[in-house]
Image (cartoon, rainbow, N blue to C red; front, side, top):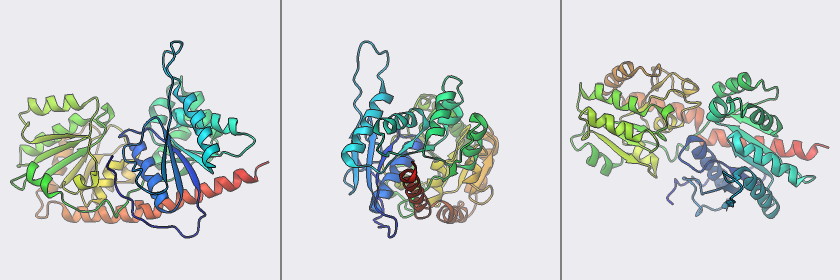
Length: 394
């Protein structure tokens, strides 16, 4: 499986740690962040052990210090659904014992932090601390469902450390769960050595042979992403100028977006590429990135586009305003405002430089606030603090 290469920067200072990471191994933002975090840590000399039911999509086992431990779930007629949380807890414990892990870092509260709590309990009296990173829908959707609220609150409060990816999500967690413990905000990050302005010439020649501007969208095509709004926005842009739309990803709303593009007679101008590796190469070929989501706890795809010097038109929802500064990196509109998004898109693409100056400002802000070189040491310090505090506890 092809994966983005992590720049080989070796950390000087923090001691080498053995860290177990669990995430959903799919194309969602939480899995991408967890995988990129693990590989960045491995490049800095730490030993990283991914524990999940499948290899994460961006994981590269060819990288030194990166290992994968598969969680095998046994089916049994008594169970309507395989008991993944229990199998995961057992695999976490086994990996801790065999690999001498220093701590577990789980991404998504449900069920990963519950499994980590079970693994820590089974390991006692040996020390196995775990950190939970909250990514969004584990709080805004799953956790706020009354059936899951008590166990989500319990798993957060039992974690040895808790982080949230945005100030918005931190605030939402406190409100929804009445959490009394401290939660540290550590934003998502981007490796600016990988994500940079680099045009995929073959892609541009194939998609826009006439030099038309390319609008791009990247997501898992879930309903919250409002992918049909991306098509609606593009239709308004296309009515004013020649342009192309590239849709990267896959999911339940892809067919609706394809149908809408066909209904509007845009089949030749809208290209669905499905799931792709080397996303940084594709993003660098865009002139404008669209993120019309109903809600984003952070907006990782927008940040990756910004690092590639691509201005963004996104929704003023959730944590996106913490990433995209309206009028600087791009523009923000309210969810569902396709007309407003189209006006901003046309204004940017009608400029003499097609928004290149705005894209350069976006790149500068991505480097200044969200670069891997700035964020990864924050995680390292958190790990060391949790390990020290756990070791010192009676």
